Image (cartoon, rainbow, N blue to C red):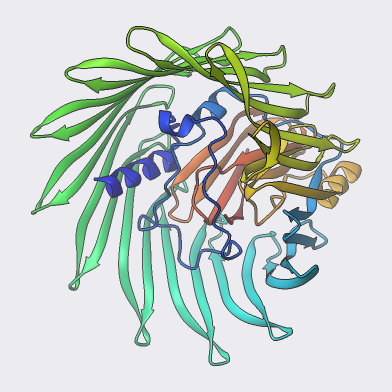
Length: 535
């Protein structure tokens, strides 16, 4: 059941549904035990139904209330060119003339000396679509080939295939392959995953999807190839309202020759398309049984005002936790007060207070615990910025024996005056050097009179990156993210836009390592580019 629920959460994220955050994940300053035995690397196999993330439920409250991080025009865009973590891990980037990432190099520090570790080299076609990725490791004083990825596309820039090869015995050997099909609207209909075995491609699994006229996914079928035949495994069915908000979601598993209910989600929304309620039910003994319920309220500016979590116990809903939020006039969160339900009333457990500089950049995020009415320090994130509003230094500290001490957690670094951000996993100190976006500056100075979609920066990224595009005239714009399965992960923009340069932040928090694509539709113009998320 646990594995299937993880699969359920994964599908919700792929379908663009914001999943409520569980109370156990709301412990202030919760630190995951560090896992630094090796540097994060590219996933060797595609992010398919088989590879399930464990933290996709995290971040809903951040997404609902942190609405200030939206697309906006920037005179100059800055991007990290060198990131140093705990003075032990460093990543540097170089770019081609079109602003695409050409080379990314990872170094580690030992005995005070920086050593090469991994190198990623990219090539692109004339449309700035990635053609190849070469992954090398540094061994015995030289770069050694390790893995290679090759991509093909149709005339609409939809990815047709993705090939992974491993370097063995001084030659490239096939490893795995993904093949895609589409309908006339560009919706991905099927994905076939194969592995190279005994000199031939062998089917492993397949995904088939259907859509309504608005492009909303209606069904998602996952099959495995076993004993020479395709076998049903999981099936998901969705319904939507007239505003394309998902109303219901049904998850089923194929057991003993029949589809069996597993989980059902029901959601409601207000007139502003804000989620109001989220009800989760499980199929038990032939009937649907309530499991959890989340209720949301909003202020007049559509900022999340409160978040209530309830559990179903002994035939009734029981309060579990509640968060209350306050904001400044620009929509930046000032406080988050977390309460737990006692025997008969709410008990304040902790609070988070954020402070900002005059430009709205986050300087400190402080968590405190309520100790019999007195607030006690718990943990803090502190930041330093350059004159351009880019965080150059970030540190995480915990209160220990009456003093602040370094500790490890995920540190989010903000830049471009808060319009962009990236999260460094499991770090105590992060230092970043920045460079301005050459491609963006060139476009702004020359005012090229044609549609264009730039390569995201940084790329690879974790977990945020910025996508830039240029509109020569006013038009309707849709910018969306897709995974390698062709599932629409998130719609970043879907509205009318005036002519000009735009820079949009994409936050992939909670998404698994892997290859993703972003697609821009603007009038008759369509372009697709690849993102690489590495955690």
